[in-house]
Amino acid sequence: MSNPKIPDFFAIKWFQPRFHSLLIKQWETDEYFVFDEASGDTHLLNESAFTILELLAQTPLNIEQIIEKLGITDQAEQAEILLSLPPHIQNLAQIGLIEASHAIT
Image 1 (cartoon, rainbow, N blue to C red):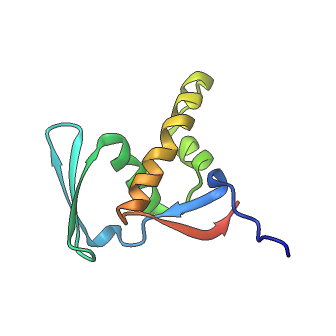
Image 2 (cartoon, one colour):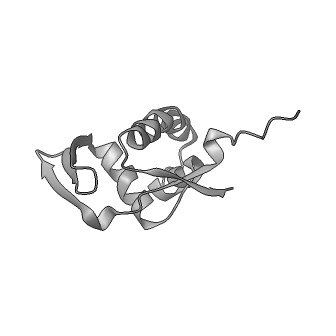
């Protein structure tokens, strides 16, 4: 019996399907309150998480594509972002603000 292939986390495309229905209020300079009308939940996001949320509202992206959209070209900075992105993605998915797309690259 063969196991179905589990997609590589870095290949999964993530997206935000209902950005238009989120109520967003910026607090201070780098925090955002996000009220999700669909779930009734309110979330506090830092600037990095909110930037990711905005990008994923535009089009489904995998982690490499998110780094490209952020415009990070320095290899050391890319390596740092590569380590910090997965926890942000996992957290946003866990609280229901983003979803995995069925499209994998």
